[in-house]
Length: 194
Length: 292
Image 1 (cartoon, rainbow over the protein chains, first blue to last red):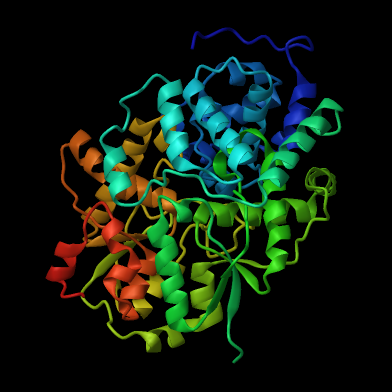
Image 2: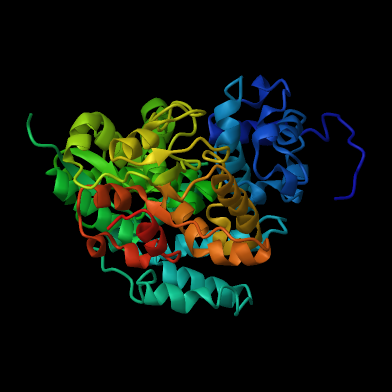
């Protein structure tokens, strides 16, 4: 990412959005004193443009847009190591969830569309079938991401081992799951939920 | 002692890519005389994709499952590390955050049930059934077999949520393996991430992280790795051959679900433990170690 000089002023610091991240994640970014333990233990830090401790620092400075413009949040694998090791109980894994949700809601400027595609298909499957339907998830992901041959050699092997089920399972609560999804959408429309 | 009995939440993977985990769990419980009744029409817990982008949805799906669990008496038994983590997270967050609880109650249109105890299989074997009793039930001890116990991420982390064991130095899986006669090794990567659900969107990341796990286990002198998570299993077993290709190395490490090895020690016949579903075949290892 191109380095842009960071000017801090009331105009450039969006603290309201940071409060929203804190409300969503149930954790306070103000507790962080930049010890760096989160980044030291993060298995994905080398893939990120902003390492985990810098994510918190950027939030403290109201610079959430810089985070969303980067790729770090889509490289976090939710292993919970950062949250576990933080000496100040900053739940960074939950902050990452909150940031992803902000990006998701804005249909993000993120370049990491494969992860978003995988997430979207996963949730669509739950909404339609009530349970995850792995075969369809993998197949549709390959088609939609244009990687028709991805893991092509694994498919037949998994089928022969009984690891891929060709049909989804019937579930009595399919309609109930759809209701949960639509109620949440309704609550968001009315502004009752973050 | 009254007979132990649980309401069982297998999760989506155990009905598909990890069916051998489901099969072997049922066999082990039956063999030990522990009751296990599946919760009818349970739904997906939402796993990582749901909490990644929509916490309210994730909490609601878990709350719905806790409500469905009311149909079957007994503590909830969970095999998948990810489902276990999501259910425990939901109980933790909904228990302490009233605002979120009210939103979830509206989303599922029912009161939230938080009383049900959610337990991982390891907890049931060690704390409810008991290691001594487990050791007495062993018919074919796995002596000579050196296993690397792989916890991965979600069984123990973060602090205060799963409360299964210590976050940095857990021993619960080693305790079970030693009770059934296997030898365990100390190794560096037992708590490191395998790459988890990036297996779909970014396989090269999984190859890199899982390679480090396999390499560590091999260096420590393990014959095999034992896991309690379908995603760890998929990444280490299904992708092992491809990882060996990318990193020009050879591991040949069979990856077992913990219930498969416990089942073997309890004398359950191999074919009933889904061992033929493993991609890295354990047959050579079994021959070398005289395990049948």
